[in-house]
Image (cartoon, rainbow, N blue to C red; front, side, top):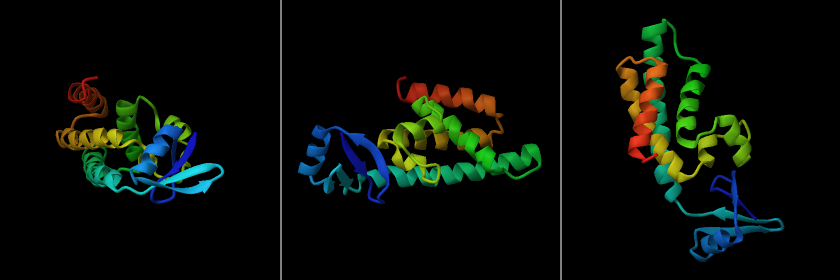
Length: 158
């Protein structure tokens, strides 16, 4: 097992020796500690996926706030945003954020999605975009959940 950290020195899921050797050989990582053996990712492709996802998440939060004001006569709060993020996490990974934090050893102060695989963030990006439309259509949570799950299953052949 090889420990891995990202470009922001945050721990990611450990990888096998074979994967670590490949990343080092391809110049996508560098060794930063020998005991325990730890590599730091140096390639930028991760952020090509991650930054659009962060941007769409913010737009989705704006739509959720507008939806909450319209339907509940109040601004969306932390719990509203967390519930919406949890919905998308469960659809994509099958796990809650608490389960993902344990699996990837992510502290509660750190951004969970920075530690997910690029594939998951790409799928989250798709769902966040779709969820904005569903919020604009004024659909309640349960209907959005059902529609997002169907859209995800169709788009990603699940």
